[in-house]
View 1 (tube, rainbow, N blue to C red):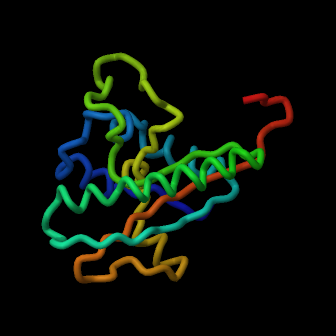
View 2 (cartoon, rainbow, N blue to C red):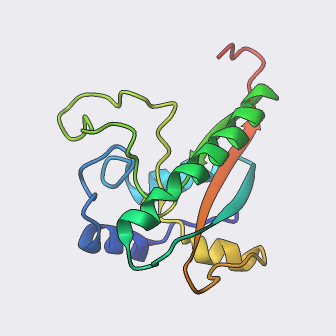
Length: 163
């Protein structure tokens, strides 16, 4: 309930991100900001965590993004554990989805892997640095280090839900 969706993050997405409007993990496909905030707040609990990677050159975007895969594996492990323990989960993670070489959005077709696709924190209007600061977590380590964040939201499944 304490997490807010912030308009300015969406503005940055729209004006500066090349993935805007091209993937199910990004706006506008993820929905209006108020919908996103309601979805986040519908989960009473969450785990915010980060992982650290090192690259030779922080300005080499390809090398930097290549480190994201290990963080996504960790995110899937955390989510999988909670699912196994009987929780319904919703994951917000890093950047935009790159599971498929070519996304079905905006072609009018559904996502091929909705259970594996995790929208990025920013697409939901969440400012990762604000959450990290609030939880007394490091946000910038400097040098050639990359800090990736994920938020796994969870709630007990309804007793009649067999999925």
